[in-house]
Structure formats: C-alpha cells, structure tokens
Image (cartoon, rainbow, N blue to C red; front, side, top):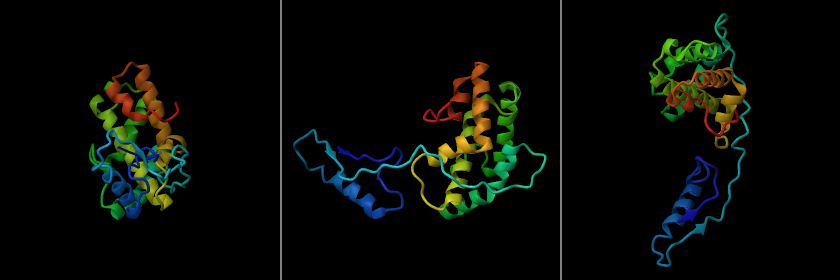
Length: 197
C-alpha cells in the first residue's frame, strides 16, 4: 500500500498535473511485485493546502430586483457556471433537471427556511437532499470559473456555505427541517459534516 499525504479528494495529488499523478501511480504499481508483505510505503511528497479556507471570489451582480437575494445571486452566477461547464464538458448539476431549475430549487429552500413545512414546500421530501446537492454543485462549478485556477480541496464548498446568500439559506432550511423532526435523508445532505454549524 502506498500512503500519500494529500488533501481529501485529491488521491493523485496535484490537479491538472499529469506528470506528478503518473509519479504517484508508478510508485503504487512498483509495490505490486514485492513479496515482503504487508507493504506500507510513504510517498515522499506531502501536499498541504488551505482546504477549509473559503475561496475569495466576487459574485457577479444580477439586476433581478424583487427576487430573494439568494435567487438573484444564483442568476448572477449563471454565466460563470456556463463557462465552467463549457470548458470542462461536464456538470454535476444533474439530479433534478439541471441548471435551469436551480432558482426554483433555491426558492424551495427559502420557503423552508422561512417556516413552510416540508410537506408544503413544493418538492417531495425525497428530493430535498438531491436538490441541495444540485444547488451546491452549481455554485461550486461557477466558483471554478470565477477564480480561474484549481483551488485547494473544499475551498469552493467553504465559500458556498460561508460567503453566499444561498449557503446561508441552506443552513437555515436544514435547521428548520431538523427542528421539525424531518427525515434524515432530507436534511443530512444539505450541509456537509465538515462545515461548521
């Protein structure tokens, strides 16, 4: 076994660095023929990052007066989200209808945060968790386009939950569902365990 001291979510070390990633794989494969098992070898490079520190990126303004600030914020991020999707050719905003539904999903969370019951929020309880994951993916993918570099692991997640209107709405909605003894499958995916409460 090759032990690599890399940030969580970066099993091969440095993103967008195929030479380094190849070194990691070659070091792991070099252990296969060894007969002095069990084998545990430390990879010689340690990577530390600021994975829990939020990104610093400016959210583009949206001129959607009259909308809840979280919905206007999401609409302002749409161009950045599209830039990221176009440059990578993929998106993780795929559970409940794609990016066009993100403002609608945020509106569901706003209503829950403001006291509407899970039964009356406009989305089945089984879709609350997937909706939160779609919204979070939308924001994190938009953030990748705004910062124009590969940030340390979890920095976009921390930015979403600490610096955006929608992240704050998800926290309040999660608290409301939990306070009402809502089902775990609804509230648990809304805020990752590593995020401070």
